[in-house]
Image (cartoon, rainbow, N blue to C red; front, side, top):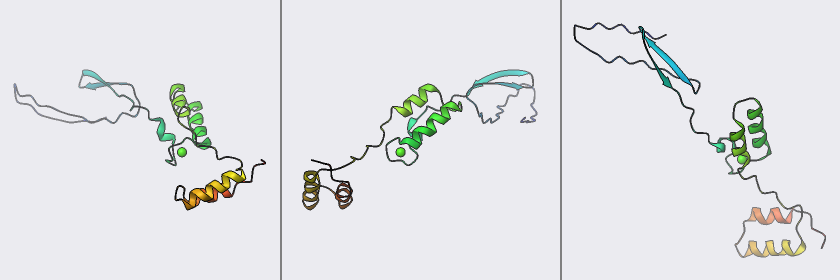
Length: 130
Ligand SMILES: [Ca+2]
């Protein structure tokens, strides 16, 4: 409990302030030498992107699982977990590429349309049956 001692002359007034760091979003009762009041601590607005731990702009399986476990632990609300789930998931890479797609990727690479990493990713896929 914070304490401050001040002395006032007759008819003098002074502002006395106390600092408080609330740790929960709720109403706090305050009492100063019999004078009572209250203040309300508000939770900061929820940002579902805090679950994008790797910052790639997608919510992957592990990030989704963390949001779900936070929901079951009562850390976030159902509405908040749904906000996280509504964010885009990472695009799933295709399971295979056709010969034509692989040839196009090589051509696109030489035309400067895609990067070396992108052409390599396509070429490393198994070839789809035609
Ligand atoms: Ca992510």
